[in-house]
Amino acid sequence: MRTSYINVLVNREKPRGRSRFAARVLALLTVAAGILGVAAPAHAIAGGTSVPQGRYTFAVKLTMTDIPDGDGTRDSACTGSLITPQWVITAGHCFKDSAGRHVSRTVAKRTTATVGRADLGTRRGRVSTVVAVRQAPGSDVALARISPPITDIAPIHLRAATPKVGMLLRLAGFGDTGRDEPTAKVLQTGTFEVVSRTSKLLGVSGRKPSATTSACKHDSGGPYFTVDGNGQTELVAVVSKGPSCPHTGADTASRVDAIADWIAATVGRSQLNRPFVTTPPRPQSASPSSKPSSPRSSRSPASSPAPAAALPPPAGPAPPLRAAATGAAGLLTIIAVVALRRSVRRRRRATLRVRSHRA
Image 1: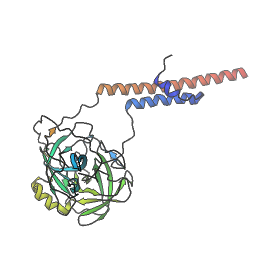
Image 2: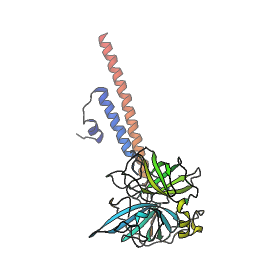
Image 3: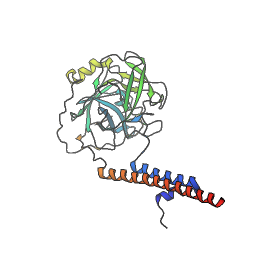
Image 4: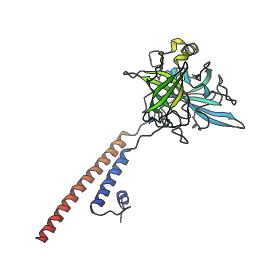
């Protein structure tokens, strides 16, 4: 006797009458949903939501490989933002030596910057190598110079105005998805409110998707930014430190307006907040392999040169396969409806027969 997948689903329990029929219909619809790939949204940044490919392309995943650690090495990661084709802004503590001091150099054997790739499982975007680091004086902010420059992805603009308590900001990050949870494979985002302000820092608390939405390990250096009605983004602050995630209450972020003159002097004022004009990069022959980062350090640490490459976009799901899957799902739904109608007719006929016998 041939046993179908649907029968296996239905026969795990043996309901009777309408319950049995309802179970069969549910099984059909479950298979249809599976064919279409329906799934609940992934959550991370500790309580954030996944960013679709093509949005917030200025976000950077910094991958540090082989950081000296006692007698061995370790890997780590941070988040950052592309602010010019050649410079990434991130947290200062992403580059620190074995004594915990912030240093103006890479500290890992290799540090790569992956830009414009919301889903790290694809080959979209660009990958460059961090070749130099500059630490901001008196602030937990660093600038990382990358090579080759990335000229076909729009950098984020820097906000000049002083942030106000009560304003809403968006955070994007590649950090862990929660306490003892893995690092996000897809860029995560959430909405935060500025709850306090000092001359160099902001206190920011999660608001959406929930009050426990919070920056997590490896979100260090991630951008807190605004988005206007035209989609223009402006960087307000970068992730610095906070309690274990997820949590309610404030995280601490370093204001970029407070160090605007230093940033301009380092990268060149004329390079900042420029209208974006795409310049196709020269083709690259090889791409660096990015090891997954291990969640070992605070929300941070770094690396040194290796060839960088322009990576082609991945081939998406085949349209014919998607169409076939959609058709199969529709067919299963039709079968379920037809079966329901037939069952109703059979019950009516049975009821009529019973009545005729009683008469």
